[in-house]
Length: 364
Image (tube, rainbow, N blue to C red; front, side, top):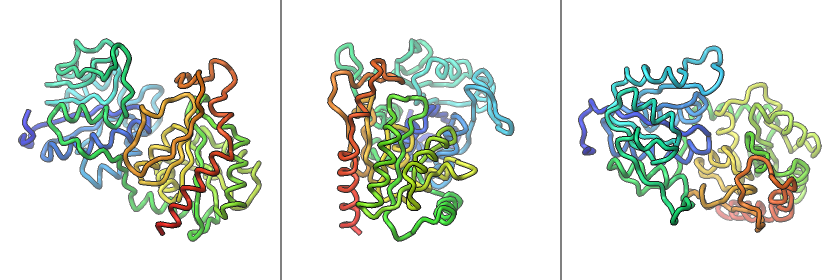
């Protein structure tokens, strides 16, 4: 398939499920648009992923259309398909090519039964027979090779002839998202001229990735007193109570929680992270959003291995403990001690943040 394809070429892209993975897929999306500038590109994704990518796609022209699906219960007011409902929805799109940026069996089956002309994806989850072009997974012998998800997704773009030399993750803030950030700063009485550290110690359902709440409170207090910063505790809707409790424990007017906001859309997260001088985050979606926005990040790794999510924007400071039991990739510590995070000391994280703040100040 040549990249000089006519405008009638219609390409679908199944986006990853999680925010962080979607962020790491942005270099592949950019490559696909550059490789097929006149094609009609359709993004297939969960609503929260469209919320993340909407303004960036509008700005850069990544997608011409969107098809949204829900994996669980459908929420009122959302125009989404069930998994099975995607088959007729995609059939109506008359797609010539589908890139599967997911490893699941069901996305390959839906693409096949929707009559897509060519389905390209990794040979994972026993789905090779459903693919027209099954790409081998990187391996060291029989073991999966630790490869950054950025490169993993770009390999699929390369398979269909797109340029893949640009590995930078990318998100764009719309004017409305910028206004959300400005309104948050005013509402929480934050100082535009004071250095800001955003701390995210959440990790969806993976408790093995979470840094202890008392450490977060101590770090926030010491950043205020020792580095003369202001601190924003980041959270999503499901982490509101935890973030508010950490702010209350710190008990300082320059330590605020996003959980005080009535609404917590993804656009607010983007805007808050974009305003940070340094972001401290566990290995979760906000970490990758911050990297996409070229913010300096201090990343805290517990149960996961850094190599799978290595990034190529502003270099991250990656902190982890050398333990025989990590990485285990378990959602909950199977040994019950959670040492990979509990032994990651406040002193060590504070020193890393101070180092990044000094670099930022020197560059200002």
